[in-house]
Amino acid sequence: MIFFVDEKIEDYARFCEWFNTEAVSQLEALGGKVLVQGVNSEDEQNLRLVMELPDSETLERLVTDPEFTAARVSAGVHVDTTVLTVLKD
Figure 1: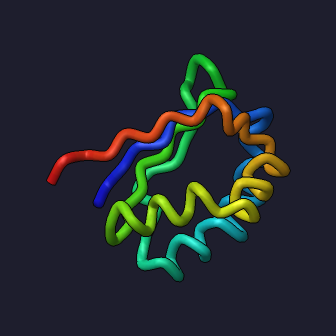
Figure 2: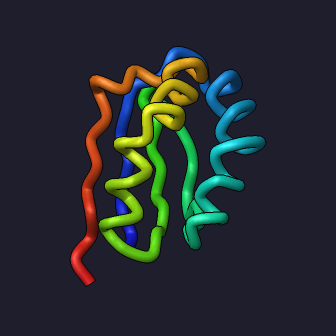
Figure 3: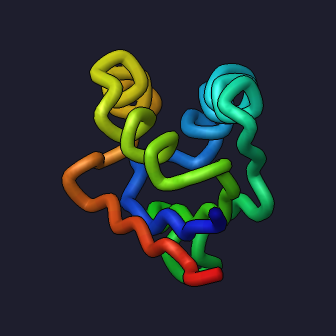
């Protein structure tokens, strides 16, 4: 299952420090991977991710995990701005 993440962040370098060292390994442990990672060239606080997970249940477990959410907030993610778009197979 492939999905897009669109959200606001405080600082891309701060986000990458957490995401690339901690979150990516968590995603991989769940059978997922990051396909694309970056920020909007006109708004560097607008983060865009394209990721893959085995199924929607895994995604649901991840986004409702309080520890993962707390880590995202600590990394500067404005979690109230997160928009997930799941692609149809």
